[in-house]
Every structure is written in C-alpha cells, then in structure tokens.
Image 1 (cartoon, helix red, strand yellow):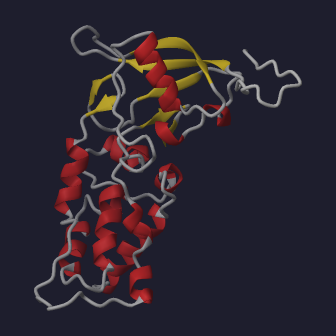
Image 2: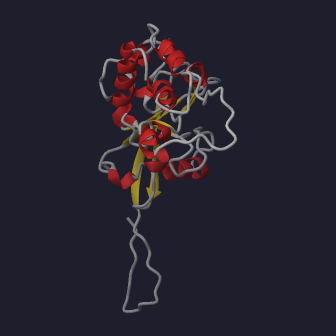
Image 3: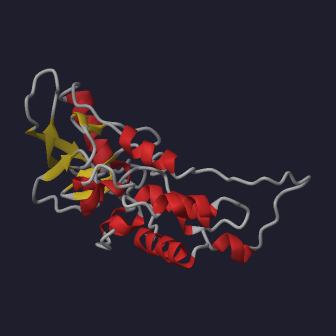
Length: 251
C-alpha cells in the first residue's frame, strides 16, 4: 500500500492511499477455449475505484484482450451488468472498498444468456422478450395539446419507469436460467410501465401477452430480481401487480 507523507505544509498535495485487489475473472475466447476458464489479476486501486475502474486497468495495463461492455460509467446505460462475487451488479456502481478486499473478487458474465466472449453475452433473446410486450405508448386519439395526467396517475407506474434494460434482474432469475422462453422480469416491468399508464389504450393486449404460459405465471417470487436491480425497482411487486390485473381482466 502506498500512502502520502504529509509534513507541516498545508499546500502539499495529498496522495490518496492505494491497495492491491485481486480479481479472478471468468474468461472465454470462442476462438481458443472449449470451456470458460478463470484467470486472476492483481491490480492497484484507490478506495474510490469501482470494479469497472479495475477492469479498465487490467485491460489497459495487463491484458488488452479482456472483453467487456461499458459506456456511460454512471449507472444509466446498463451495459456493464455482470456477476460480481456471485451477485448481479453494475460494475460502474460497485465500489471495490465495499467488497471484502481480503479475499479475491470474482467477476463473470451474467447467467442465462449465450456467452459470446469473456464478460459479454448475447443480449438478443433479452431484447426480443422486451419487444414482444410492445414497450411504447399506444393511443388512438390525437390531442392538440399534451395528454393530461394527474400526479396520482403518474405515481402509479413511476417505479417501473426507472428500468435501464441492464438485464441484471432477468439474468438473476432461476426460472429464466432454465427456461429460455420465459419473458423474464425486465420485460414484465416494462409492460407494467404501460399497462398502468392512464394515457395508454392497449393494456388488455399486454395483459393477454403476459397471461401466456411463459408470462407472469412462471414467476416463483424468489425476489432475486428485486435484489439485483441497480435502480431499486420493486420488480417482484410489479410482477404481482400485473398478475392481479390479469385476474381482474383490467389494469
């Protein structure tokens, strides 16, 4: 560990202490590997560093072949979802100091989607489910001004508007791991966002879609999805509200 040596000089720049973290990453190169393999890296990090920062340092300073997705690095784009110490998280929001740094940090791709390379999975099955629930406002009217909505009406679906499509919830679901046809929590959350929107006119169609055998009824209420969501969405609650709406026959 390196530390700053501060003398009686208030103008001296402070050097932030660093420490060495060990990351054990599940690697896979389809051109070389028959099966994924684990590889460990020691990297010097700051207390303020996130797992994404450590991955960058490994890629830039130790192994340029390490492959992962990232974009905004601020928990908005959702592209860097991965399993960190066995839990789905966004690498850009996971501070290394919040993990147990006395032990190695295990990093691997999210589960349930086809592995392409290292920490990258094929997201197409995930987005296909998302597209099937018609994730857009459907309204036949053509008002001259905005569609008026009360604060209470907006609050009804406010939580599910937070989804960033990172797939952390869906890929944490045991049913999704074993059933490639299940819509998954994220698709249901985005259906919820429009089903309960007072401006939308196609809630019945979405409810019919999710009443399918691979829809909401496949959910086993394990709460894995809610725990995995980096935006704090009450995913399991949203799924139960969609189930109730199906039983009522309306939103």
